[in-house]
Length: 77
Image 1 (cartoon, one colour):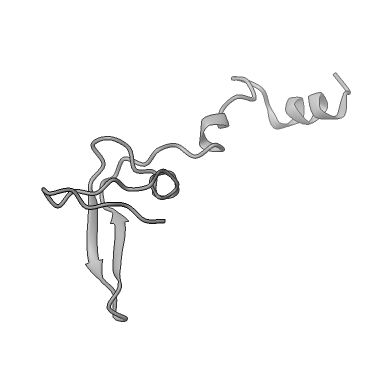
Image 2 (cartoon, helix red, strand yellow; image 1 turned 90 degrees about the horizontal axis):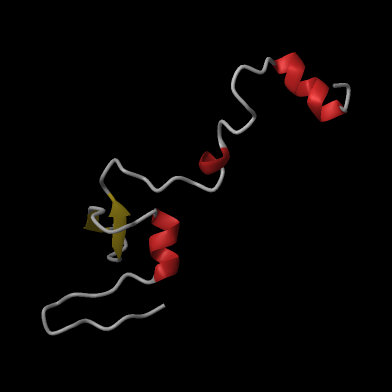
């Protein structure tokens, strides 16, 4: 992936990289030099975009016991 540097020294981070790191508007990032001389981009703020699995967390229903959930998945209910 490549991008162009503007006259102000700005670049657009490609979408696949933003998605991988969970970078959204307002995210803070850090650039550091790795031992091999390459530059590494990392996200430094605490706010991470929820993963696709985190978005589903808690959808089993409130108040169900493990036994009730297992009965539902087995078709015993």
